[in-house]
Length: 86
Image (tube, rainbow, N blue to C red; front, side):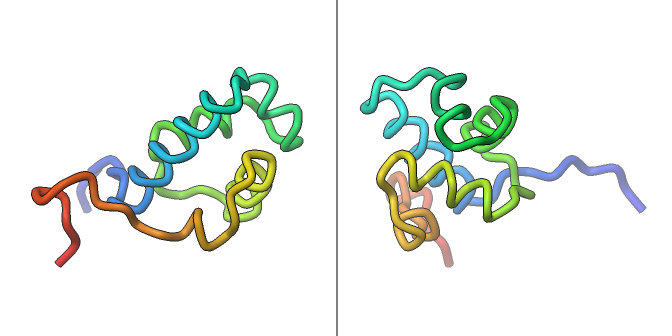
């Protein structure tokens, strides 16, 4: 068994970028967004860092505060031609 760290999936990276950009658009600090979503600030940071093992309920709560639907949250958006799923 190897000790390989969990790397962010393309979906996690896409979600991280989307939520971070939306948080900035809303002018929310990490603390403010966490308070509004009733989660710990560490969870906001984990989402924005692309953590691969997030609780979907937390992601949905954060997304709801930011005006993002569950569908918005679960859609992978490639960054460019080199970042497409096969």
